[in-house]
Length: 156
Image (cartoon, one colour):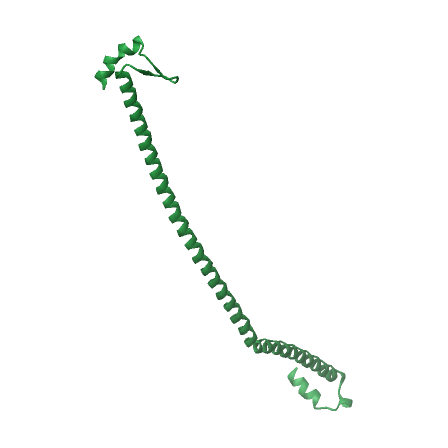
């Protein structure tokens, strides 16, 4: 096509053969397609260049997002520290309450043992003096009490 185009363009338009006019039409069509492709590429490149010009804007957005995230992290760390402090004080209170409960149980056990000992001592004393204790009051010993008195004395 290149050789034919040189010959066709060397003639005046009025003197050209129809074949030469066809070659020039094909060349014109090809040049138009090339020009359209280049124009669309220019538009694409201009859009890309415009985006590149927005780098500072994008950088500003990212810096702002980073600062907001850092502030949120700081707030969360503060809240975490407060919750850790609350948990530590609650743990201390729990340990103190458990210690108090243990002490109270120990005292209750001692008091119960003392009461049992006092009751056993009183019953032994009442039995040894031949006095029986009932809900209504004191009664003289029964024959059965008198029978068990020596056994209880040996057991004591």
